[in-house]
Amino acid sequence: MKKTIQNVAFGILITCILTSCSNNGTNKNESSDSTNTNTTTTAMKTGLQQADWGEFDGKKVYLYTLTNKNGAQVKISNYGGTITSWVTPDSKGNKSSIVLGFNELKGYLAHPPYFGATVGRYGNRIAKGRFTLNGKTYKLAVNNNSNALHGGLKGFDKVVWDAAASEENTPSLTLNYLSKDGEEGYPGNLKVSVTFSLSDADELKIEYNAQTDKATPVNLTNHSYFNLTGDVNNTILNHSLMIDAGRYTPVDTSLIPTGELKSVKGSPFDFTTPHKIGERIAQVPGGYDHNFVLNKKGTNLDKVAEVTDSISGRKLEVYTTQPGLQFYSGNFLDGTLKTDDGKPIMQHAALCLETQHFPDSPNEPSFPSTILKPGEKYHTETMYKISVK
Ligand code: GLA
Image 1 (tube, rainbow, N blue to C red):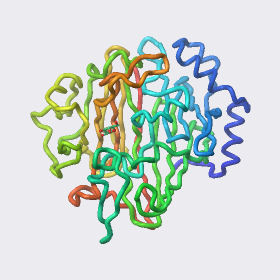
Image 2 (cartoon, rainbow, N blue to C red):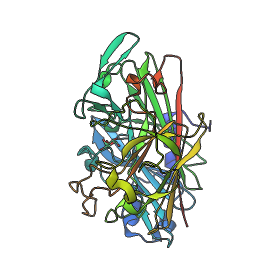
Image 3 (cartoon, rainbow, N blue to C red):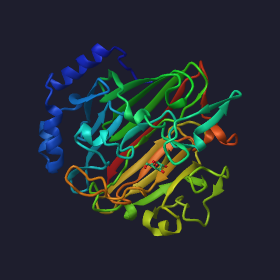
């Protein structure tokens, strides 16, 4: 584990040193990000900056900017542990954000479908919003037809987290949240901490830690929507995707796994070699919204997926310690939401690669267990790495 500073005040002090205690840095950078010029590089300070971003639930909301030596910038809010932008250059050096997001908190308070959010206590679906554990049946908040999705009505994506620590070497941000016993129907007080760090190799690493005082299902993930062209006017159907998974979990009409681990061979789910997303999507009713059973063994941080885009020359690699990956092709995006510059976010404007345990695991004994018990330490890692050709 890397060195972290567990003291809030000291964390803020470091932030102040890195920002020369200026509060307006983020807003300035915000406007320069969208101009797509290189002037941002000169004005940019590496490290971590903090800016006021409003208030929610009586708590202060901040927007943090992580800047590495190359001038790549990731912005994260303590509202929902949300990645709001990730600005990187394309092959011609033009900068734009490769994730969907908004410049202002109000965009998120309108509940976009988990844009960039930290998702929990249980990412993905739990059938009928119920499960039985140690002889007791728990009823969860149901928010997706008859199922519980992404933690319920007010999941981890809709709460204000405490920013607790920062780190000097690699710009990083740790967010903490206490999910109380009974929240959204889940048992046990769950202490969650998520650390985001941006390396000089353009790797955004997300580390999830949790502990509980009662046995509970836990499945934490990040719900960033990627469009490597940096422009939602281009769909992701021309992005090429590789997923190192020989099997996937077929689903019923409400997107709950049937329990089968099905071979991808000969099907539109075979991404073991790269395929354009649009190539076979018409054969998948509703589009891709499926959990892939990763080939990786064990819990090392292994590469599991790669996306490339010929327009921008960008490449995204996904590494994880997790056994599953939900590939969602932005099927429910329908143009209702607009980007800050007014472009409608249409179907397939972006894709998600959510590293996770399999959906509905609490009701599927044959799937790897998602139950965290008192005394155990939940720890998973996922890393997104961006590069250009
Ligand atoms: C996940 C789910 C999708 C959808 C999106 C959010 O990826 O699997 O079905 O709910 O989140 O819209």
